[in-house]
Length: 324
Image 1 (tube, helix red, strand yellow):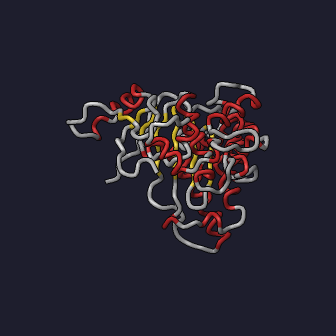
Image 2 (spheres, rainbow, N blue to C red):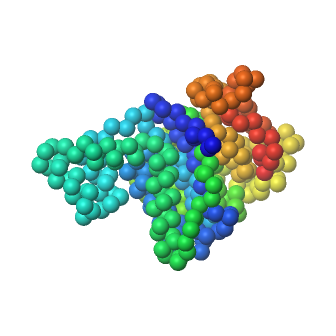
Image 3 (tube, rainbow, N blue to C red):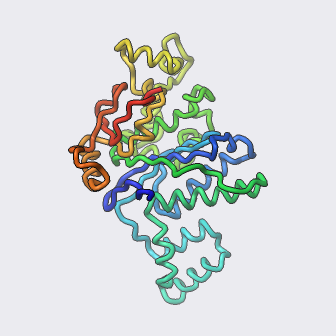
């Protein structure tokens, strides 16, 4: 029987989610505006569910999204109607019913409100809404049938601290760089950072929430430094010009490797580590799910081996192809 997903209730927490296209097929490159539509749906469904998008990146055969789930979810009736309008449109019967009830009785009918609110404030519901909506759009436009997404999406519970979330956000936005599609993520439209650079307020707000600077120009410079992206022409030895093999060789030789260089490697701990954060955070979430683990396991936190991310711990002690 499938286990329920690891979650943390009652406090603000983030999730790094990674769904993959069935069969590993690059279908999102085969339909015009597929990536753009999926990005739009990420924002729409997050708003409906009351989640905050920190950043995202849509690739040809999978996508990443980092969302923050607030500690509580208790929208006013007016907010419920606004969120319903966003998803269903103002002319939908249930929206008009909710709007009329709010106008005439000062509240949304209890059954309808409950049906809507129970779909909010939960990362699983958000991903379900998102994947279903995009699948319907994609299959209708491409003339295909059947499932679009493969097995359960992977997710990592991420501690809601800027020092942790900024690392995961940068890792996500650097996906097209790791795939050698661009040398600078600002040139890859289907990611949160590129939207932020283009002026999107939602994308900027997401990144500003995990960076030290709170004015975009300064925050953008901070983020580029974190990603080891220079502001001018590249020079010999520039971190942004080193490929993964060179960075791994530097690591093996004990060389000086920046965080931005580390994030150019595929670090499975950030997608498969199950829980990510400080040692204390990982142990806290592990303790809440203690019954899932054998009696011999005494603690939850495990180090991230092979890369200098010593301030972070994970639940899963990954050893096989953990860093590539």
